[in-house]
Amino acid sequence: MPAQSPAAAPVSVNVAEIEQILTRVTYLAGRARQHERLMAVAGLALDRAAVAILRHVAESEPLRPGVLAVRLSVEASHVTRQLRQLEQGGYVIRVADPDDRRAQRIQITDLGLASVERIRDVSRRGMEMALADWSEEDLEHLAALFRRMVGDFVAHAEDRLDVPPAAP
Image 1 (cartoon, rainbow, N blue to C red):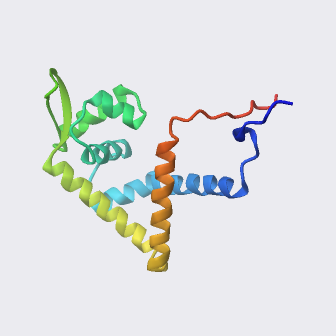
Image 2 (cartoon, rainbow, N blue to C red):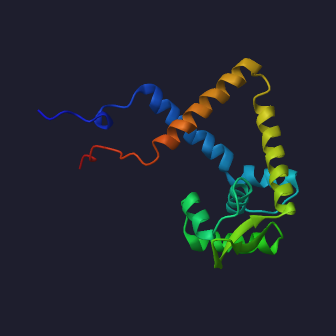
């Protein structure tokens, strides 16, 4: 009898619940109404895709649009369209790539940084309101567990998933 791979074994009840909760949190944080509220309070008029790109650019060194697309796991044309809008709004600029003068990198502007800071501030204040009844100890514990989870997700991001075939 062949050995069963760990991925083919049933998923624990706790892992199933964590997956369900993360899906729900992602939905709640990413829904259009929540984004519109965030933008209204922040005083900005950016769509969700533009905010994701702007936040990523703010957290990295200037990078080529193609690299940005790969990091965000989206099509290059999607990034190009969003970058054009962000550039027209003064949030980012194109700078020469020091490694290849024919290429360009995307760099955030002072306006872009200030906008990302406003978005982060509003988002954090909303999170603070939602977690107002949590003790500082609980918040520290949750933050530590999230750091650990993200580290493990990053460490296993390229691992092969052995999922049994679906029954016909």
